[in-house]
Image 1 (cartoon, rainbow, N blue to C red):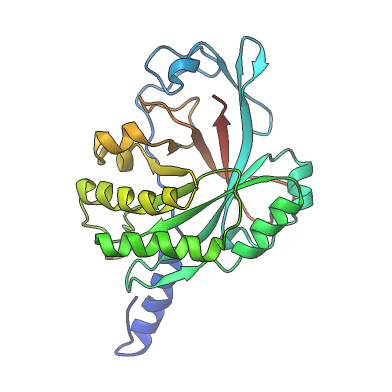
Image 2 (cartoon, one colour; image 1 turned 120 degrees about the horizontal axis):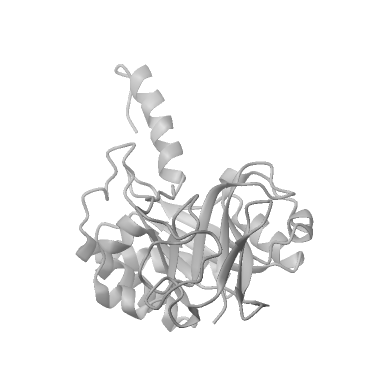
Length: 271
């Protein structure tokens, strides 16, 4: 965010910055040698103990995972205000089984906390349509106090609501602007994530760590080893990350009936 010329220029920049900070952008990295579509996975790959199954991509670009001929996955999306007003009954009719909904975010420049303006509408609409729900928070914490503050913020706005899916912590750089958290180290983010998770878990919720390969490889192994991962890597035949993942976000350009704008597509690998 900026100011003007002194007034016009910076107001324009300020508006641009606000748009960027609210976007919780999901960045990805392309693998050097992605596995062929449908190829059986090997030990130590993204499915770990589920290795040996097959990923199948349908004509809508949606993935399913089969093991011994049986479906072992669910199809889901993640949404925020940027998807617009959603017809959740149409979404359910189009096969969506779960939705991870943005509950809020911290501003990438000034550091204020915001509720996603479509959060209540989305979480109620999804539940009424029979879609299982979880939430995510876009963090820009730069210290332990802020990480704990974010967790309390999430709990406050959940208001004791039961969830089917975990609460995800999403801490990313915002390279388009001089984001307040852009220079935070992976070790620092690991501590912030642990602080966030401790409060969330003490409240009885499950947790999930979001990131692409670059994001996750910066973090402490102890954090990655002890929490379920929601991994982002787009437009590839299969995930290239060499850890077990619970959910793979495989597209940012998905089309789902009932959603006016493009949305992220996800596959949940069932244990």
